[in-house]
Image (cartoon, rainbow, N blue to C red; front, side, top):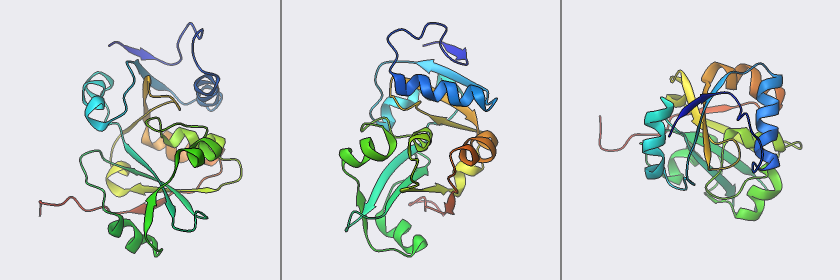
Length: 183
């Protein structure tokens, strides 16, 4: 794996949704580092990518309520376990479950294994609420996929918060997901 600055020079073979990510980031003057790699569908597969990228790839969970009316994108460190009770108590909502693939596709134009904050650029109706674990906000860079899990990007956290989210009209909510087994 090699580290590159910015978009690929040759976009042939790239999906249009990936190219649109690069177009938006470039239009917002957001610099990013990129690693191309085999499909990474688990956090374990991301470990080697993180070493090359120099940034932790966020665990991105796409969640919904039982009625399938409220949807959330939770960004948290891959090292933290996810327990639904931890987020529902902080959000003041009923039990959340993992959202079905059809909702990922409809709202974010993303398939399972490719969920990323960058997919919010496709959520024009603001159906998805962004929830970020506080530990992500303490990182200099956010590692994420450009709507496809065969590339990963390192983007300054401040650029995600101050440029990208403003451009896509999404306001994050901060939560504190516990790291079990440590005091």
